[in-house]
Image 1 (cartoon, rainbow, N blue to C red):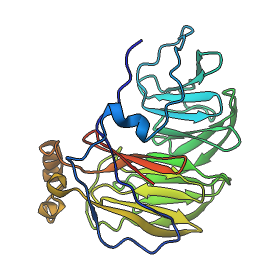
Image 2: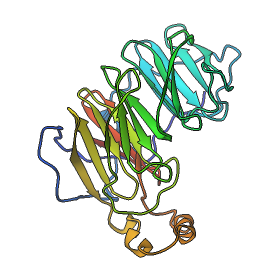
Image 3: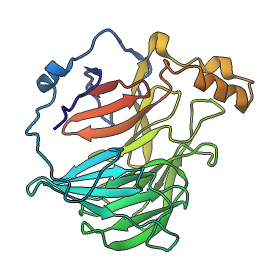
Length: 289
């Protein structure tokens, strides 16, 4: 069995909550202060490492994983499928593999999330819809949404979509459990461009958290209102958005390609116990309380 590794994990410990006032000043990130792999158990407790039998299934990419009780769910975008892993039986099953154009099918999987009733919510950005499946993979329902990069499902079944700015004028759209739009939030970064697969959204105990590319902030949504809960200064690794003012989209893309050492986004937002984790596009993980 291959060793598992966590790359460049470091912690920024903050006391945060959606009901606090907006964070106005950025928190500098010390890129030289990192938690090594040997120190990881001082931050997060590793309960067990399980040997898994593939059971005839092959997972090519672990694009996203979520856990619910004894079950672990894995999104493999290469296969456009979601796998389930039973941690008690140590068995892998291809749970959702329904590519097609029918109502219960999808063109591709952009993201997925778990409902608090055990359902799986599969986001097909190309078809601008979310399909809901039971924990056994059976189709339940569909709802129309905006295209985007990611989704999250709250305790009450509300759905938040991190929108694609090239196709939508807002950053986040929130829908109720029946698919009716309830609220949306603008991109306040003032930056004219973005590209697909940037930004992210996640559910919390009280609502949602999300990030916008090139903004270096984490916002929370609670009771239909937005607040900035964290603001980071990436120092010399900040992408120079000021140089893009007045430039065309082609120049923007060339700048993106030549700035691989710069932080352009925070994504993979997740709440784990009392911690919130995010990652950067240069393979760093931020963890805060």
